[in-house]
Image 1: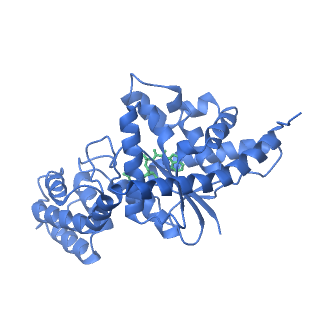
Image 2: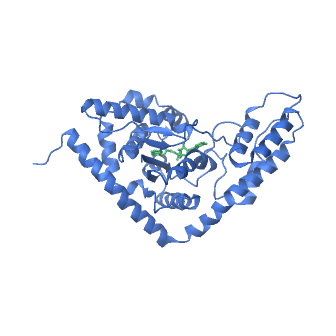
Image 3: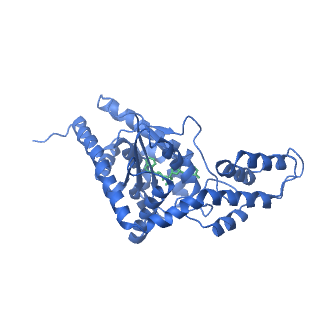
Length: 329
Ligand code: TYM
């Protein structure tokens, strides 16, 4: 049995990228491993949500985890902010994370380009908090999407440095994980980049069928292939990539052939894609509606999860303090 940790920031509803990048892999592992899946509400503070938004999004993410099939009897599901040992480990790890390496991190460089009025220290040390999330349970596997690969690499650097500094092998080096396959990137509907919460290019698990049809029909394409065998443009390739996760192989090869023979009508492709997404999200959406009405259940899940997570977290912190040299008088 290995220990597996993953999480999603509580900045809004979960989209197909979150599901296929992280949650789905996690769901496949929940029965065979020690699994921790948390709601990264501290991480969401980098964008300064209001108190109402913070609570609302965190609740929504919890609801959607459960609706997507995480079983709280098997997986430890918890709010990051319910585990005080995480910020303590974050503080300790910050002491040997270096400014230069944090500034070189791609996600930080992106943030300082797009979020110029709010370049806070939390953004800079974001990968250190992520490392604390994973190392607090000494996990070895972290199911995530492609965009988190570099953060995982940084975690391994912090682990190696800690172990070297204290002449120990206490922390294992965690690996980004997708069952031996490449990590996934689900593209957005706007013709470039990845699907994201704030990009306005996403399909959410909670979207109703009408919203899904509207978004997909509006997705960016091109004016169509003119000659058989023509290379696919990025926006069209993106629609095929989304098809790969929600449609049957027969559907995909049908439209692929139409494209290759320059006979494709993008309207037909989008209609089929929209229906396949709806077929996939509808059962989850129904559960989202059911579960979000049940506050008592949510409270119970969060309380149980926090208790279980703290058991493992407090053991780690006790041991790390000892390794570092904190001793009581
Ligand atoms: P976040 O909230 O941006 O995304 C959560 C998970 O969803 C994956 N993901 C995607 N995968 C494929 N295609 C996409 N378009 C796409 N968009 C998002 C992400 O790779 C991620 O796995 N920092 C993390 C949350 C976090 C965390 C951790 C994860 C905090 N601490 C410790 C793992 C371990 C984040 O912001 O993910």
